[in-house]
Structures are given as structure tokens and as C-alpha cells.
Length: 274
Image 1 (cartoon, rainbow, N blue to C red):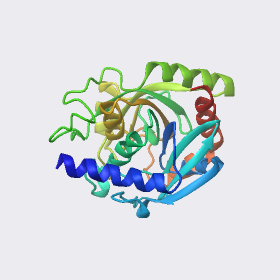
Image 2: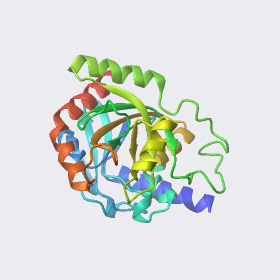
Image 3: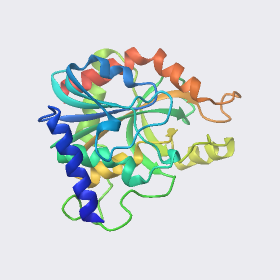
Image 4: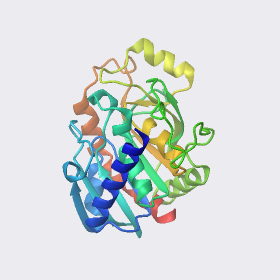
């Protein structure tokens, strides 16, 4: 299985290289409703997920199925306009497959973004939160199974998943562009149902500031592969029971559209400073 998976990684990377993708410096994964940033990539090469060998496709509204390579803020980047989720029925190997391919292409830095529910009572919709740590509440780990020592250690340390120096860079970028950036812990919840009010009260006690249905598997695998990780959550709604309103994915997409300017400014400035 290890050899088969490694071969799939190589085939996907070779295909992307054949499309003109060369020497990328950073991978950027855009969450629900945040894909518009990819339109600002210069000298763009666009590749459909469905054309890339062994790549899944996203089935969720607000997630396009395109990979974009080009220049953003002076850096050669690969941008994923949408990601894959556990609740879509994909295995964790499939969800994190792009991370493995990016490493094969020589990328050393991964910028993860997502739309998330605010659990911290001081947050409000539209808040941007830098991820300082995470909680894997969904349970499964993408590293379960036979380990390939050539792509990462059997027991990787998770003390500092989100790179400390990059956290300082994000804070500096936020200050330069005038954004009131929050910091906090992101919790991965499997979905697709939203959390109950009782669960949200529990998560707050556990130290959760924001909660969502992605990001953590990618962060674990990137760390396993020796890549530097940074992350930002766009708080699109108050979590269950906090506002008295029902939750909907339409609200998530609407709020990301409202704060897209601030989000894009923060990401671009961060890339400029990295």
C-alpha cells in the first residue's frame, strides 16, 4: 500500500509539472467562499482537479475544483480553490493527498484557510483568527496505518504544528494592513451536521475558539512531511446556541463575501513578508 500511494503522489506531481508548474514556494488552500483570492494570481496556470491523476473533487458549495499556479505577492504559489472533507465520504488519505503532492513538488510552506464557527464569546461574524493550535475532536488521524519513513516519521511531534515564526509574520501583516486579528485554537468536528449547543459549551471549556470541518488533517500531514504550516480562520457565524439563530451554509458563504477584502489583504501581505 505504501508503494502504491507513493506512486500515486509521483504521478500527480509529474502531471502538474507537465502543465508548467515549476518551483512553487507555497501552497494556499482556500476554504468555503474564499476562493476569489485565486483570481489575483498573476501569470496563472489553471488545472481542474478532475484532470489531476488520483485527485478527488469537492462536492460542496463555495468550493471550486481548480488548482491555480502563478505569482501572488511576489511568491510562486499553488492555490487550491476548495478542498475535500471527511463528511463528503473521502478517506483521510484522499483528503490530504494534495499536501503530499505539494511536498513532492518541493513546497515547504502551507497556508491553510477556512470558514469556521466562533466559539469564543468575544468573536463576531467577520472576525479573522490566526490558528495557534488545534484539537482533533473528529477522532480519526490521517497517519493511521502503515507509515512510509521516506515521507515522514512514525510518531511525529505535534508540539508546534503552526509555525511560530509564521505566526509572528501573520501578526505583523495584520498590523500593517490595519486588521484586528484574533488568535486561537481551532477544533476539527467531522460534520456534516453542525454542533449542538451542549457540544459548543463543552468545546469552550476544552479551550476551543473556533470550530469547523476541515484543516486539521491537512495540518497533521503537512507537519508529518516536515512542512511549515500557517492558518487563518474566517469566523462566519456564532456557533450553535450562541445567537439564537439556526445555522446554514448559505450564511457561511455570505459572510466570507462580506469580509473577502480584509481576508485577501491579510493573506497577500503575509505572503509578501514570509
